[in-house]
Length: 165
Ligand SMILES: [Zn+2]
Image (cartoon, rainbow, N blue to C red; front, side):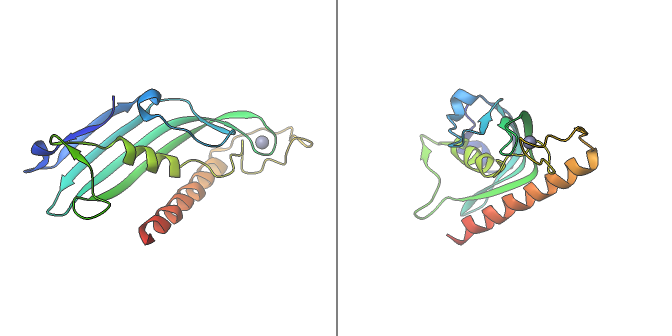
């Protein structure tokens, strides 16, 4: 299901929107042979309105099927944006499109999920490539979490760039 916002419902109070957008509704082309969306986009967000904008805050999750850019091994990567937020203007050039009192939030969620895609997918941060596959394929929780932090950092850098535009 696309994520639709009925404007009359949000006029007085914030709304909690929770659900999944299927891949066909998302219509997401990664543009990268190494990364394919492998599951619906799950969202759990709070939407608020003020005089000039709509603010969305919450979490976005999606499973990706990736191919390691060094050793070509297939692996799964989970996008898990826990404190995602986004502000959409209701006025001006880039304002949200509202048709018959309803706004489709799908494109915004799609865009921000896309920004969370890994830039160079790696099966593990220390992957040495196809010629020297390490015998120890241990996915230690430590390296995984530091990897995750790095990725999140990249996302914010990307978002900052967007805000400047
Ligand atoms: Zn690899």
